[in-house]
Image (cartoon, rainbow, N blue to C red; front, side, top):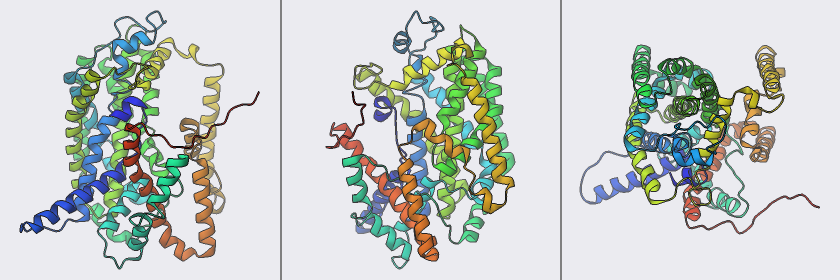
Length: 491
């Protein structure tokens, strides 16, 4: 929550959650054993379930809008946007409150749990999407619970628990140069696919349960949201929930390829559309709330696919995974608003000159104002560029799918091309370096590379994830890397 209210950027903590779950529960079982209390062995499936619950809980704090679209509704953000600004309508505010925030999180979060459940086989088994963070988490968990004779477990241990190659290298690179190792390599080669697929499909979630649950939670939301926010009409909510599964699929597919959760960008599309449709008087509130609805569904469904990938690789029951995700979501919906109010009451949240700037609150409100003003407020030729690149993306995907395999593999993925435009190209060198290493490794020894690349990749991703914890502590203590690199224009 602190990172959310300061920088607005929060890294993926799946790996850290898995590690902490292992450390605490393994320590707990050892203490019980020393006390003479007989306990069952701590298994990889239990490790996965606990990690899933923890991730679902913290995801609500990170993606619940406390530092963006919900905070953008308060009066302070309204005043920062300019009380005389065209489109920033007086009265388009709602002060934060534990009650309505908790209710909003409950009615908006659970729909996302069921939106993609019927497609889990397609995403995980048929498409074989890698979901790098989910895969790295699974390899970490399997490494902790694998007999020491396994070669990949030993490599993982060398990369990771024996510090110099994995963890320490990430520590040094991050602390001195802030160089991310996460994107070096994220491919996987799954062993024992048949057994994993069997377990993954054995305890499936019936289609009718997922559909009935989605419809039920949607109806509750369609009734409750307009009562909380009269500016957002019920028929807008209906349209949002009709389109949400398609958007969730697109985001989950992209996340499976790139490890990037683009839920906020889908939410921004909803923000612009709803703000424009709702009109000048209601547009700002309708846009911000509608953004939250779409973002919650799209993000949670993507997170669940990451967890399903982890469960697939650790032989964990999908039903248990879904239940654990639901429990974590309930905890997050209750705990996150209280945590936010600790900061909101104790600090000057939203002050651009303070520590807790919450920079995305004013950004989201300004985007809603832009949506109210319409396309005329967009830069010149913006729509034409959008139409042109949309056509390019369709053409590229058709060429990739219809061409022979030896030709189609050279056609770039528009989804991967789009990521640097949204988040910057800071990881391009990382991915290029990793691809070159893997290419050279396969040329030298393809069989060994197929076996060892997943272990190396997971060690790098896990090392990067582990460093998040001490780096957050250093950030809280206001300790910065001793080397600062910048590029400025010369006179």
